[in-house]
Image (cartoon, rainbow, N blue to C red; front, side):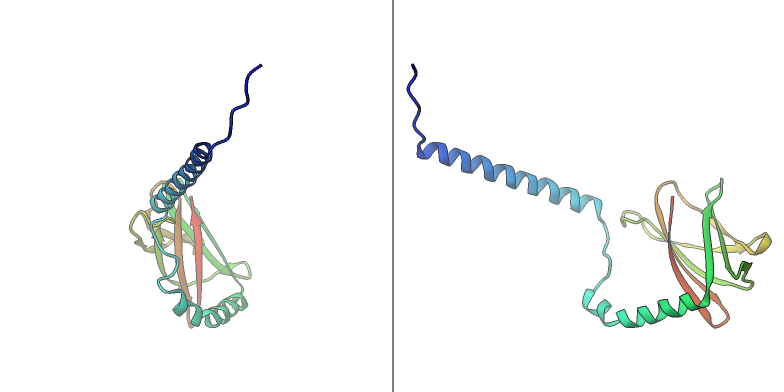
Length: 153
């Protein structure tokens, strides 16, 4: 019959050191993943952004009242095909401002220019590189303006 071993202070010290070593290692690994995968900011200054929140809500409500529908797709050559219409008909004479950015901010943003195509659609002059991209689009028709954020893949 073997004798039971005593639990000493060295055992407790080993357990505590091992526990905190695991916790610190996991924290360092997670922080490294977080810093290496997110390269941008959501807003530059959250306090200033909060001061404009009600204005943004009013602008969104005004945009909803326009009743515009938009469709943005990529064709086989990776050009953006954009259609903006109202009540099933395309809007003519649109002015657009668009920026294509990588959702994680790892690649620089680039401007996108559109040219009119058949049946009221607009086609981007630039191609979209492979991968996930976010299109920030501002569309003006006369005095009316709508802003969209579209994910492309």
